[in-house]
Image: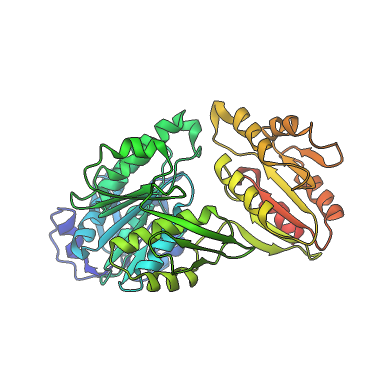
Length: 454
């Protein structure tokens, strides 16, 4: 970002008696990360962002936004008075987006958003200046922040969009106005707030609400809920998935511990490889390849891009326990689809020792929580996983289902407040050549167990 403060006044349609020549080179809303050249937005969170303006000034911001219902500040630095800070944040983002005028690719989905965003950005960067959503900044703050911090020479902007309520993605799409909209898949994430997968699909489809008339909609063609709703979308469409009815599908997949390779129907002589485990990540790569194809990127360039991929947040990460055991860590997110996918991937990987799984509650599943936790039982067997450790009140449902397969010495349950006991038991049980999976929603805090094991 680069603009004079007087341009900020103009973009926000605010009259000013003074002409400010202060140069703005970025925006921030976290005073701890403020730096020289930033314009500070005191957004309302659990605390009022205005409380942190002095801290932002100490860290060097060049100017600040100030909401008019607060006492007018002293003039330590230039300030712009607005009626609503959040609205000003979005308005300035829309202005700057139009000014830079990059091609916009928007990505959403119940699983795989961040990985797919990174894959798309890597593929498109082979012939474009690309900016992308940092980490998973994918809400009403993250999307404007991503836009406002893209360099002025950005040619393609890849924006991740998340949701926890109907209408949220429609709003985010109205800010970004995508040229390409991508939906990775429809799962059960946030079903507590939506009730059914049908309603989740309706909410995800909002990513097409503000898609340019000459834009492209790319989505998972294996999902009937998306196929049905896509009939109402007038823009060009491309599908990916495992079925040969899709525009792009994988023809041969070879899954290993840290890499997955595959070929496709469109480029049968090109072997693609991604530096991560799991056949489920192939679909994310297929989505990125379709975006690349729509953007006229050559197959061999896309092949190299995926091979060199560095993922922002590959939550499924291989680590080492202090006794030498392999740990497959996925302790920050879990839902039924993601849990089943990682269980299948681990099952297919060759290991020298035993496979042990530690599963914590999957949160935000609402009334469906009991049945969805129970559903994991169909994917867990002693022939694949010798010992099972379960954590959290809803995992009691899974324990009841698994009790017919496992005896009490190989099926153990712990309350959320018993992580210390779980850690001690794992430390006693795990052998150097074992492989252990840790997977749960963040609210279970298995990261504490992970830390102790390492």
